[in-house]
Amino acid sequence: MKGRVNGMDIKAWDEIHGEKSRENLRDFLRSDTDSYLILQLKRADETAQESYMNYSWLEENGLTPQFSHYGAVYAGTLPLNTDPEKLYVKFNIDPPGDYTGHSMSVSDIIALKVDGVVTCFYVDDLGFKELQGFIPEGYLKNAEMALEDDYDMVGDGIINNGRKDSGINERPSVLEKLKETSGQPKPEHLQKAASRSAERGLE
Image 1 (cartoon, helix red, strand yellow):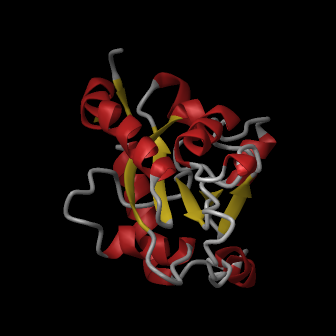
Image 2 (cartoon, rainbow, N blue to C red; image 1 turned 135 degrees about the horizontal axis):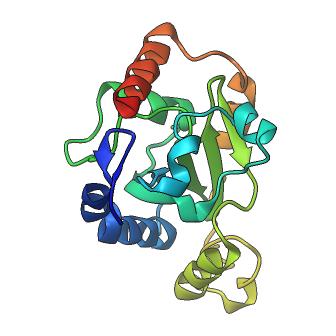
């Protein structure tokens, strides 16, 4: 694949994120702790028009985020009480030293795995849009088969429920916290950070 999309050579993107993307996805799905995954659009001709576009634009153009268009650029353990907004701040203000993606911006996707349940969020210009079924069922099923301790639980959509007698306590709901802030504009300094990121990508 040749050419440049959004300021980065397509081959260079593949070299940086290709194999690592598969490893990040695998580590995220198979982690036995609560985890997060950052996905960004691959630098490819077919994804160029989607970069940095809000969800309304996608809908107006008959598009939906496609898993095959994205690469998993970073995976990590999800700290307690961390939601998509906090991850957005972190990856704009103080990203990990080994992070190779761009500053988090509109059109990126954050996946969270909390108590074995995977939920994906599109980074929109106003808050986050939950994506139903973004990660194909086959990936989730394979991870569940690899990790499930109680085979009676395979197929319930929760990756490794733990044994029936594990007595796992429920954690505060990340989804409930997100609903409280959904649709609210991002703080001004983060809007500026996203704008600078978009400008860099369109150079």
